[in-house]
Structures are given as structure tokens and as C-alpha cells.
Image (cartoon, rainbow, N blue to C red; front, top):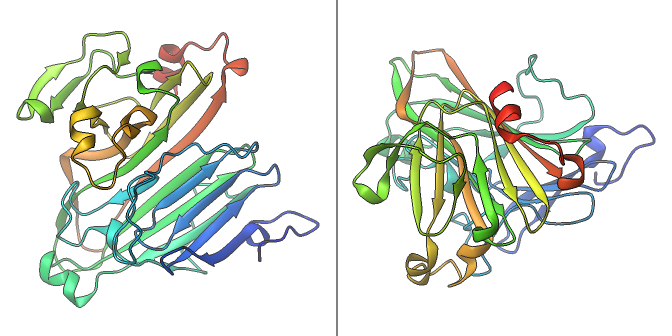
Length: 314
């Protein structure tokens, strides 16, 4: 494992190692040199690098590395309740590698390096959230360097259950004041800084000048984060995830967070594909799928790129 075969295939580009806490992690690579690293703790993506070795995800320099808790940053999976640590939070559970996962016929794996992970609740988990499930997560790295996560949650209990879900994604940015986000104009959102009061987005684009913690509803399936200084645009494409969460703690709150540097808020923006406003209900034996694909476009390739047009028509 870890070496390319004469004809590239995903198994030859997958390597399992240990992280600093002793937890297994999986590294995916593509032929051009891009890479993705996934921890089996939480199924968390802890690194995503392009073919020039540039890190595209933010991870805190003060991240507390423990074998029982995910570090701050990367991409974390929130299930079955968004933002609630107890109740069997998937982001702090140990996942296993599934070598023979059920087929994903609708998602082509040609030219992709990928790993399939599996999470099932323990007896202790069922005491907090008494619903049996199988959670399958596929993380894949395409030949063009794009990263995708596909979650499949199956109800294997005898009664329906409801859940909320999010891919909490920390994007690495040059400076939060140099970033704008397009694709959420005219949408309704709940502002968690104003007792979840409902507002309507007024601007043509969202810029960042203070703490933000919002959930946008009925969002389009593609939005764009433009980083002017790095001349880089992130596209977030999603399926089965109607909501978008935007979060940045800004200066005051950052100083109170033990696992985030005082000024690190300037280097990150959380944009989460999510299903929060209306919980998902699964009947016994049924399966839900939620997918996010992250693509980076250099500004040299998008000089005539119209985010609003591109975003709305995806």
C-alpha cells in the first residue's frame, strides 16, 4: 500500500498509518500529487492538499490531540444531533475501514482514490441515543484534486428515528477580511447570535467583519467562497443537504477557546453542508444519503467566472 501500480488504481494509492495520538489514519493520493488524510477517530478529514502541496483545510495549531476527541479543524461529521457532543456524536467515535462496502452505483469511482468507513453504535451509545443504525462514509480524492464525502445512514432498528446532520468544514483562507461568499443571496437564515431569530440575506455577497453563526435554509446545491489574496475559489457542491451553516468566532470568542489560537480566526471560515432546520426521519430499513464535493478553482481559470450564475445552475 502507498505505492502506485503501473496502472493507477485506488487501492495502490491508499496508505494506513498512525497519527500522533496512536489512532489509525488513512492517506489518499492521486497521480498528480494531491492528498487527503482521514482519521478513524470521527471519520474526520484532517488534511486536504493540492498538487502543489498547499493545505486547503484549516486545523488549529492549538488542537488538542487526544485519542478520545477530534481536533478542531478539517472536516468533521455531525450526527445524530448537530452541535451536541453527547447523544452519540459521530465525530468522537472510532470508525472502522470497510473493505467490501455496499456498492454506490450512482457515484462513479473511476480515477478516484477512496476509502470506505463504517460506524455502528455501541451498547453505551444506545443508552444516550436508543436507535440502531449503520453509518457508511466514503471519502474520495479525484484525479483533478477534488474531495468528496458521501454519507449513507441506514435505520436498522424496528422504529423510525429522526436526526440532524452536518459536514463541519474549516476552509483555510488568507485572511477572513479578504473573503466573500456567493450563492446565499435572498435566502432566509437563523442567526444563532440573535436567539435564532429569522432574517433574510440582503447582500449580493457575504463578507466577514465580525463574529458570524448562521444557518441558511433551502440553499442552492453549489455555493462559492472567493479568497482574493490567494486568488483561489472554493466550490461547495452538495446533495441531500438543504442547509448551509456559516461560522467564524472572531477575536473575542477565539481568545476564550482553549483549542484555537487567539488570531487563528483570521485564517479560517466554516461552511457546513447540513440538514438542521428540518430533521431527517428514517423509517426502519430505509437509507439516507448526503454528499458534499469540494473543488478548488485557481483565479487564472476563473477570470470570467460568474459565481452567481455558476452557483445557481449547478
